[in-house]
Image (cartoon, rainbow, N blue to C red):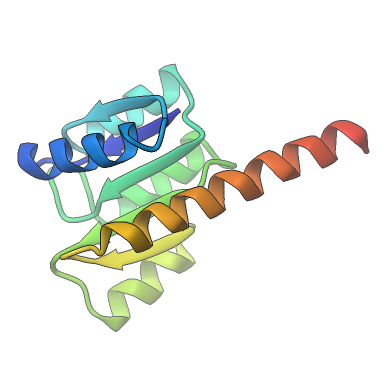
Length: 127
């Protein structure tokens, strides 16, 4: 299951439509607080999230990593720079995108992270 976290309803709808079309099961959250609650109640396989939103920011990334430590985090922002990118990746994000996001790159990254996670789980089960 992919958790989409986005405070802009139009962007959330676009992401939902694109990922639904790829066959992913989806859940949604409108802000960082709701995202942490949803992740705690039903841990997702991957979180795709805006960064600059209510309850967001670098501290939010740390809270998510504490809540679901093995869950890949893909973050997006329209207000980023190289310093923020470095900070977010050090905080535990798996990938970072500046908006506007190229949807094909985003979907390829999500697929790669989920495929990698599944391979890791299978190897762990054998080991």
